[in-house]
Length: 485
Ligand code: ATP
Ligand code: MG
Image (cartoon, rainbow, N blue to C red):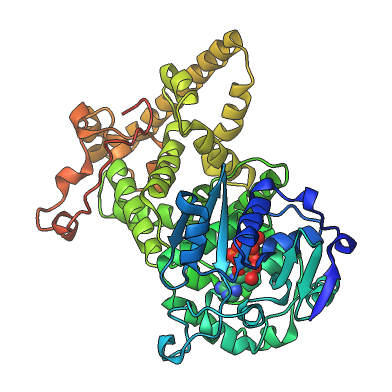
């Protein structure tokens, strides 16, 4: 074990938030050992801004609870630890762990429960990477390094402690952590990890709960290095395990949003991981919408059903919480509203709660070369920067163009076969419903049957499997898709 002088590596008590110092002080005063460990120490040494600080102690969760009282909650079953709330900060306080007992390991070697308390020497070998296993005592100004972690930091190498295959089998999430840290820190993955990180190994992620995978995916989306991690997910066959049906390919749209997300994080702007899920699942959503359109569902119904299906499928890998699902579907639905808004609704659309996300999505689609946005991304971008009077002028201009376009569509239909004409006389809008193009389903505002328009659902045979399909109960009461509804 090496004792390093913290100041030599740029660590100083004044660089720490008061909350973590308070946690260390309370535990030390109560007679326990307490250290800052993990990402906080690693990032400070690397000159990065730590996302949070974790503490470790020889106090058991129950003892931590009695030291902090109501400010502490014990969480986790598989991996029990204490959450300590100091002001607005949450500090995770773990207890030193010894090797797990045999009976809590699955047939594949996965640790099912990890609550065997131990000493600091036992604790460091249980951590994942050497660079995450440095223990910092801020009051003494020292760092305890048990495994030459400081050399790995200097060499920019990500090294697992112990036998990599065994460590992945014990906890397959370490595969995701490997790719996340390699991308975030721009470190090389050690040779012995590369050797065993096969597609077969990646399959072990199937045993991980969708909740845990969702948490990990969120960390991945918000760490500021999506551009590097996405190709790694594909290269190591982890993508398939995380995203059930999403084709393993960084499309221009995904690439653009990944770059944009990383940029936002760099300048300290907030990001919503749900937005990235909406992007990843977009092609699947379009494809599924097309599927339902081919089955003669009306566009609105096709989109609603497609949204449900796509998210439900993804939930088999990473749970998508209700509020995330609502966000994703609202962003998708906004694409229709923003693409072909009624002129009198433009102003209220721009003030809609989901406008910002919906617009960003549309704009980034356009910027990545998606021509089905018909230039409306740029239109909305310009619109937002206009004065009130200028807005009125562009809306009037938009209205004229829109009328022209609608007239053109009617003329085109007039030259088509009689059946279509006949339907048009029945309903002025039936042409939209008859369309089976996904682009149209997403680009033309569709109408409810209550508005008196015909939908193609009417012509589906009652025995059609879609009509027999058991629908998932959708609670859209709290969802506002925009002023058109
Ligand atoms: P960051 O918080 O920046 O994402 P971190 O390294 O602090 O990175 P946490 O998930 O906060 O990651 O975990 C804190 C520490 O707990 C890690 O540094 C590591 O020492 C240990 N740890 C976390 N997850 C695992 C794991 N699956 N296996 C072994 N050790 C782990
Ligand atoms: Mg951390």
